[in-house]
Length: 553
Image 1 (cartoon, rainbow, N blue to C red):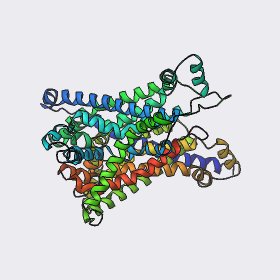
Image 2: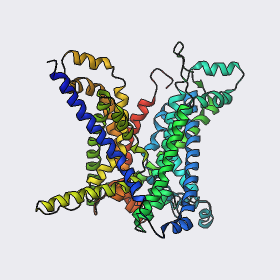
Image 3: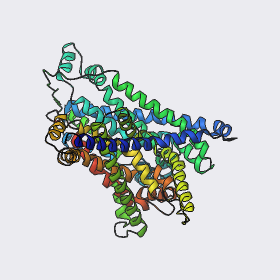
């Protein structure tokens, strides 16, 4: 008894640790592949890129990041502060409405607003009721511009900043605000000099997510005519047929990603504040009545109105107006089936691997398992386009080995069984969204005392009994949350799906992209509506857990 138990524990720990390390290696493999591809010489490419591509791509990417970051910060921080500091009519409804723009993928937001503001679109027809059509046309804003892209993407992504800022505002101790008030600070000075600096770590997290999502975007930027680095890599790979050139540009973009991650970590660790444990009293909301209350409500209503309500109503109207509900064609059903199967498969694998990685870190914490956990949570920072580019070479190499082995055994070669199938899409999803599962599972484990492990071990329970009877029941909320988030993220993912899917295999996201590319986005309204409807569930889930128990609602 004294020898069998330690051996079984070591074997179980070694197996989980090995799986965790292999998963961590798989997550960083695309980045290594990109670096190796970039070492290949590409004659005559860089003079062309430097002369005609990089100046505009660099400028547009920098301006897009700056603009979207500014819009998202202004909307998110402003709304979070008003919702936390004041009580006004309609606030209860706005708590649920504010994060809903997260349910709108950036590319769907772009397609919708181009349709609304194009000539003979909704806004043009409304203005033509009072003005001649030519004069009404002159009043339409140009959505296919850099400014249009900044506004649309900012409206869709501001909830990342809003949720993180509000979570910090509503946990700030009342003592700081009261001290500032005693020193003569008015409400604006209390916000600028006390609340905002204290919320800086959370703002850094929210803003970094906004910027990473903006870098990952390809559908909205390409459709709106903004030549970002992502779009330039896409065209270099597909239009110029230069895989190595695209890899070299990807390396440049990875430096931008690394800079954003370092900026976020610097913002988080530069300052840390905590409420007093002896007096954890939170600040009370100030009631706003009359015109002030309605103005506050209107200021908080406008961001979700333009970020969620208008796109959702447009998609619903187009689906009903064109009778898309009653005439669902076979292509849409195939796309829906493909999306669900791919997303469910990836979600199951992500949850299993996320659990294995966090288990290995809990059971046998070492440099290897810690590095694997860190690597698994870094995959989200790699844009989908670069991930697809980096996966291509390893997957083709794996298929070549399988085919060589088949030839060696005298069997028929199976061809591209991974690189040429939907398995490549699933692998991309798993790598990109592993951070969601491992992050939430790790957070769930941190709430399970180590004493439970010791008690189970003393009573003679094996590690798998411990998993079944202790971990899984206590981790259920975190695992369900991770499953919902990963499933919907997979449904919305466009760049990796677009590049890795097999021929003649479409998902809801790629179908919408195809409709928009042909100039008939309205026909894809129902597919877009399905993605948005599915995304509402996790956003509501996020809203529920964003509130601090016993704190200001």
